Length: 123
Image 1: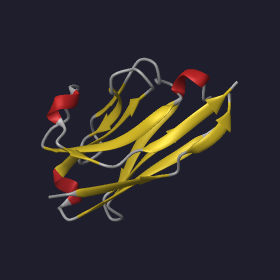
Image 2: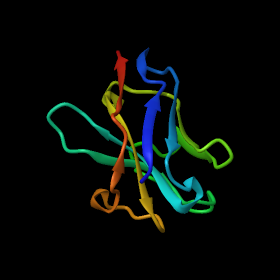
Image 3: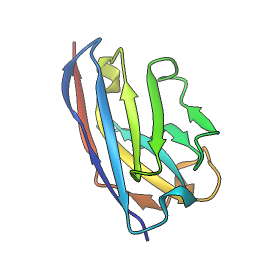
Image 4: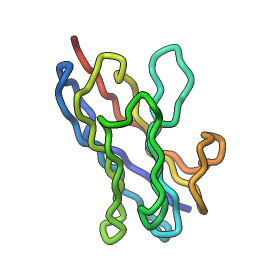
């Protein structure tokens, strides 16, 4: 059973950058597809980016393509989300999620979750 802890959230002005980290423990990290998901107030949780165990398969939501970069360091059991050119509509709680197996673009396929980290982008 893998446990996930996110960090790196905060408040930033539009156009700024943040880097989120998700540290995993309690499992074999390289067995897991990892993903970042976000949930804005009053909205459903949505997939933002996912990365396969090797980093060879990466998927981004259209809304973040070209601005966000997901990466992972299997030696450090950590997955990252580099967020650039942030917009007010990126404001949300960002969650790290994991699933054992290949990447899936549906949220219900992910069964391990962190507690979330708040990202607020002011205009």
